[in-house]
Image: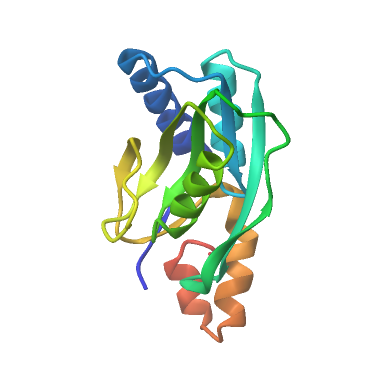
Length: 172
């Protein structure tokens, strides 16, 4: 497997790019919802950059390990905000298969939102869901700075060698 390891500086730059494009496009939003767990950090950064403190989370579980998913995404925890008639900026770190984003958008539509604009830092070429806005289109397995230890544990648990950890940039 091929990997790309993003840094905190990469994330800050990508969030600034997203924020600039959201402003330029005049995207309406009342609330920012970060998909947990990967969308938490970008949602919080966008909240700061875009000066909107109406932020909530929605937990979706789909990935079991590096490259391993469940049969379908499961909404484990829904937002606690009344979203009826609201414009939502939905944020996640990546549109990989797109399945989590599809499930989340369907879930949010059932809450009678007025609109949903989806922004991710990264989109993969094979994603079934194309976000309204994304910064990078990357085919490698993306390692975000908030999941370094988790990814290393998953690579080890899959019986991979120390060489695989070095290849992922997770070991010197």
